[in-house]
Amino acid sequence: QVQLVESGGGSVQAGGSLRLSCAASGSTDSHYCMGWFRQAPGKEREGVASVYTGSTYVAGSVKDRFTFAQDNAKNTVYLQMDRLKPEDTAMYYCAADPSYYACTNYPPRPSQFTYWGQGTQVAVSS
Image (tube, rainbow, N blue to C red):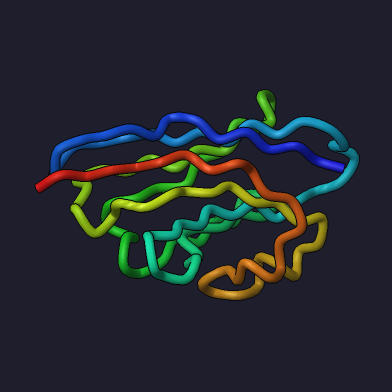
């Protein structure tokens, strides 16, 4: 059982930066696939990034602007978002799954993740 809490969202101007955090608590006896997803109004949830045992993936649409980082000591993962664009506006979710399978899909698929955070809103104005 894992609980996830996202933070760090907010409103920024285009070209600005935000760092999203996802703090995990609960069972830490095994490795988890961790993922970042986003969902804009009227659109399906899309995979943004994932990490498993240090191997990271970032979707091609944001690869040059977003980076995925881990702090294992704090059981926290981060999504550093730079040079934000209006199309990045969405609710961003952190997710986890105890199986490595969830990190074998590129981009990660929401259906493969068991645990979800409540989301944090990102709004980018032009």
